[in-house]
Length: 155
Image (tube, rainbow, N blue to C red; front, top):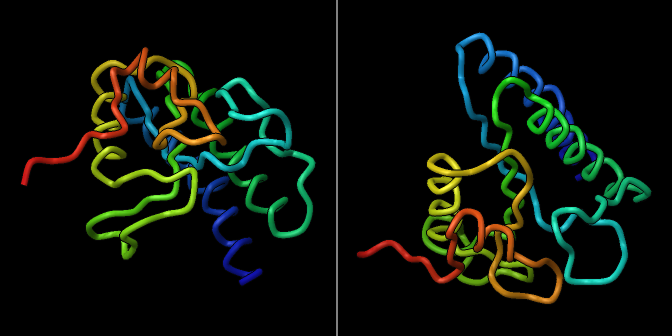
């Protein structure tokens, strides 16, 4: 598992750096990246987007959070593009292999809807995107993107 954690962190760093450069070269105006909503540093909850990420983590968590920090930095500093980070909860629902998820949880339909809203109207910055829980607040995604945790695709 340790090797997988390191490879994932490397992709978050090097892969995102390459993606940003390719997007700039292509003339993209907006870049949206998926991150995770459970990398915040210990502190009072629920965490807002302005709360620090856990840069003091240890062990495997330090490697994972380091990758998350690198990914978010690359995207948010991707000037002149508008860099948007969607800090998703743990995905569940059709196609995910999970019918439920631990908090912070996020239904895959609501995640896709957040991505669409970010494309249409997102401004630079990070957005927590998860179902109501005690760990992160999604007030910013609700107020700025018009996102709803209960969004589901019509079947």
